Image (cartoon, rainbow, N blue to C red; front, side):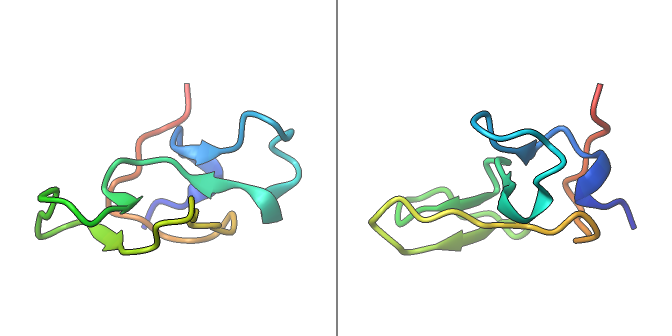
Length: 68
């Protein structure tokens, strides 16, 4: 399985990538969402205070896309 450390959706624009404990998944199918954006391969969570999904470098994902 592909992991976050090589994915273009893993990051934080305010931090260098070597600080991997503070990087988040920015993919649209992993999001704080209460609306109608519900698909069978998404992880949506109701948290209305700007929550984020912090992912470690070896977290596996089906939405992985290679970093350019």
